[in-house]
Length: 369
Image (cartoon, rainbow, N blue to C red; front, side, top):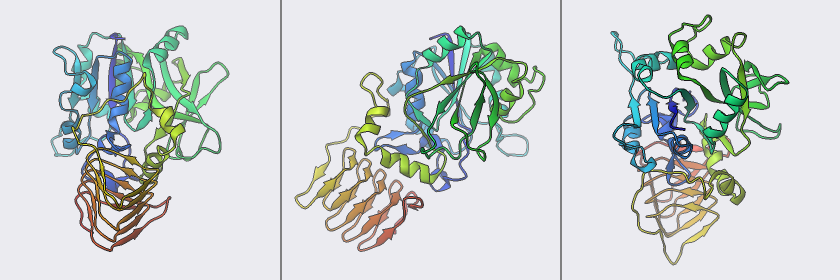
């Protein structure tokens, strides 16, 4: 698998999760008590034996750089290979380019001089555990030009309304891209695998029809001239596209079945390690069905919540169906239900905050309420 160059595209839409992405990219948003969203894409590549990873950022990337640093938690701090983070260039008019085609093309020489035969191109907001070795095997078997990945969902499953879908023929070939306004059961995971030379030709618009701003649009414009094979992924999938989906997918992890589907002993998710002491539960603490990270101090009541590192829930405070991020604090007598507290936020004494499952209240980073 060292014959594959991994590329992570951070060009996800953030217009419906702005409260959490005002100061950070979506990839750097905390998830599941101790992780960041980007950890899943990076861990998938490492477990698939991909040892060179390119990451193309858009903006607000400081927190992402702080989290990844040199890539050591993922064994990507290497002399010759490892992780390479490319920040967007600024044009003459001081505007950051928004098209992923433009951003990658700015650094195309790095891809051109790479030695890998194949490229796997994926986003960060698809939370899953996928083995790229299996995709490559099918790609070769089907003699495909391009392989794309999808998940077949049941009509009862929500959480994918903002995702595009694929139309697939009887031979398993992707024949069209269906926009999110027309929901389809084959959710497109925006993962591509192809030869590096073809990837470069698409970016350079050397193929007839390759003239769109977005890479996925460009690929499907070529559907009549290319064999685009659709690989079905059958594992757990969460797509973080909005504040509502972020909130619900975190609380889904309170289910043991969901946790077991996402976290496997043979496929651990790596992240930046924070050496925290164990959480302390004071004598009046009342905690049930919560995911609690280390370093917390809980004196009050917590139910059905995801609690990140160094959170302090004081005596007589009550938290229910909430996400409390790192270093947040809930003072005495405060009551929270369906609330997301971003990092370093404080809820003052006796304050009452109550949202709903579909519309949780979001307290932005560093706020005092």
